[in-house]
Image (cartoon, rainbow, N blue to C red; front, side, top):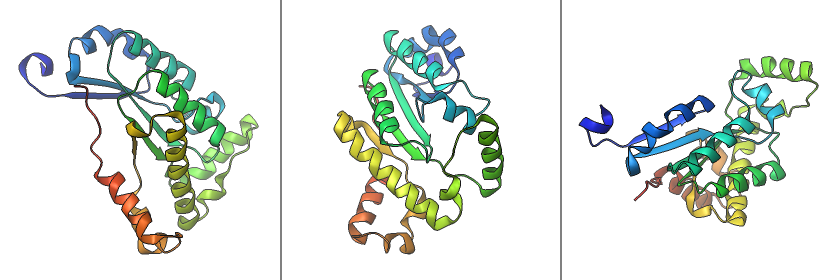
Length: 205
């Protein structure tokens, strides 16, 4: 009904490889539809801890590649990335996303509720994986981590050649006076935040 009785555009975001069953339907929308998946990391071991019931990143990437090969317009949410996602992992993820010609690449670092940290840590201990949960010990530590993650992804996107398609999602709390005053150049930092908040993401022509 959306396709045939409206002029609405559609943006689909999923983690499920089962979406392949609907590729023909999605393709029939032409430029009115963007198909996307969240791909915070390429590491299946990390995803198993933070998203225990979700399909593995390897499955999601395979689905994105299949969607690209099927001729769909693609976007990717490299989100939410984790404290354990170092530069090597983030660069690899961005490179993989670049290969499928994503129209837009969103990024957001994880923002977790404190009561979930113990559950995640327990699961990690059971799997024998070391986590960096110290970034969740205080709001200030998380804010510093989040700003660094966003800026790192911005720099790596430029290296990989996808900076023009990168749409950062900074949390509103990162615009507080206390956070800005911790930055070397507060006004420049705030201009960067406002630019990210006001950015309009691309749509297929």
